[in-house]
Image 1 (spheres, one colour):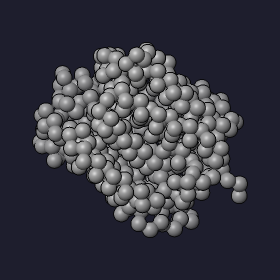
Image 2 (cartoon, rainbow, N blue to C red):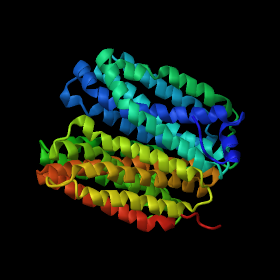
Image 3 (cartoon, rainbow, N blue to C red):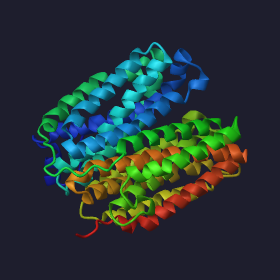
Image 4 (cartoon, one colour):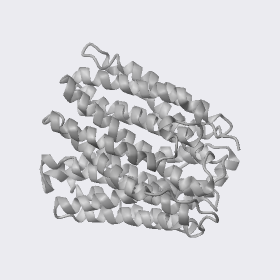
Length: 454
C-alpha cells in the first residue's frame, strides 16, 4: 500500500506512529466493501441452499436496514463517549455476523447474521470518520480519504470473481467465513490507537428520538425494497407500500440529519444533502447500467461489468490526485465532480435507446468514476471541516444515512419506472433523466458546502 502524497503527509500516514492505524482503517473499509461486492455474486448459491427465489432480496434488505440503525447508534455513541468502544466493538459485531452467516443452517439464522453484519458495518463506518478527525491533521485528510476510496477499488475488482469462485469450488459459506482472519487483523491494528481515545470534554446534547427514528427509517428502507421487488407483479400493492414507506421515511430523516439538510442550507447541511445527491445519482446508475447493456444491447454479464471496473479505476485515480493537492478548494472540486457525473449521465442518453451506442458506456463511466473520486473525497473533507469535535459522530452518521437512503429510494423509483412504463428502454431513459437532474442540482448547490465562517 503506497501513497504519492507530499513527504510530510506521507510520514503522517505511514510513519511509525500512524502506520498501523492507517492500514487498519483501510482494511476495515475493505472488508465491508468486499462483503458488499461479493455477497451478490454468491447469493444465487446461498438462496438455492437455504431458501427459494422468493427470498432473494431479504439478505440484502436485512443488511441495509441494520446498517441504518448501526450508523445512527454508532454516531450517537461516538459523540457522547468517544469512538473507542465503537472502534473495538463494531468489528467484533461485524465478525460475529460473518460467523453466524457462515454457519447458518437456515435462512432465518442467516438473516440474523446479516443484521449483525449491517449493524457492525454502519457503526464502524462512522467511527472511522471520527477517528480520522481525531488522529490526522486537516492537511493529511484528503490523502486519508483517498486511501479510504481506494479501499473500495480492489474489492470491486476482485470481490465478485473471488466470491463466485468460492461459491462454485468450495461453498458460499467461505464468502463470509473467509474474512474472519482479516477482521481480527484489522482489530489488532486499530486497537492501540482506539484505546487511547478519551470521551469528549464537552459532549454534545443528544437530539431526541435518534434511535427510534433510525428504526423507523430502517423499516421504511425495507418496505421500499419490498415495493420495488413487487411493483411488477402487484403494481397496486407495491405502489401503495412504496408511497406509505416514503411518507414515513421523510419525518424520520428530518430527525436523523442536521437541520436544513432537506433545503441544503449553507454549511454541513449542504454537505449532507450533497452526499445524498451524489451517491443516489452515481450508485443508482451503476445498479442499472448492466441491465441497460444486457437487456437493450444483448451484452453478456461479463461484458456488462466492464464499465463498472473502469468506473472504479477512475474513482481511485481521481481520488488519489485530489489527495496530493490539499490546497485546492473542495467546493470547486465537488462542483467538478458533479459535472463529471452529470456529463456521463447525459451521455447515457445515447446508450439507453435500442439504436444507441453501447460501447460509449466505457468512457462515460470512467468519467463518472472520476467525478466520484473528486466529489466523494471532497464531501468527506468538508464534513469534518464543518463539524465541531463533539458533532463529528452525528454529522458522519447523517452523511452515511443520506448515502444509504438516497440509494435505496432512487433505486426503488428506478424499479417502479421499469414496471410502470412496461418498457426497459423507456424506464431506463426516464431514470437517467431523473439522475441527471440530481447531478445538476448537486453542481448548483456545491458552493453552499463551503464551511460557514465563525
